[in-house]
Image (cartoon, rainbow, N blue to C red):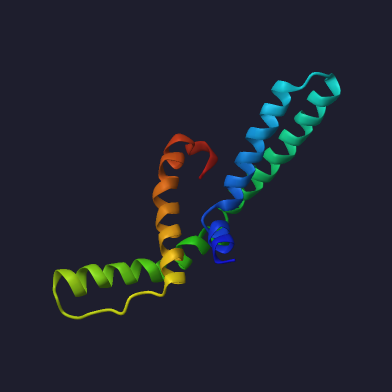
Length: 126
């Protein structure tokens, strides 16, 4: 369940839509009848509309700040561990539980893995 939640937070919805779009384009390419092509076109349009909606939601102040707000505690934790504990040697921090560690790794991965897409698709506002 934690993987599902973190997947959603880390852009899992866009990933799923992208996979479904890929499948729909492949179905259109492999379609043998006009009816199958029409069905694939309809599916593509629906998925593209969902994708645009998710991207547009990132343009709103409230929804745009949800991901950074969720990531902030993990960023603060990492800075504290690296600077305070390791660089300056002024303390020690308890390790995260395995569940929180997994969430942190997913969030870090999402931020760093999404950067190439942000640069490649600047007009989409990703």
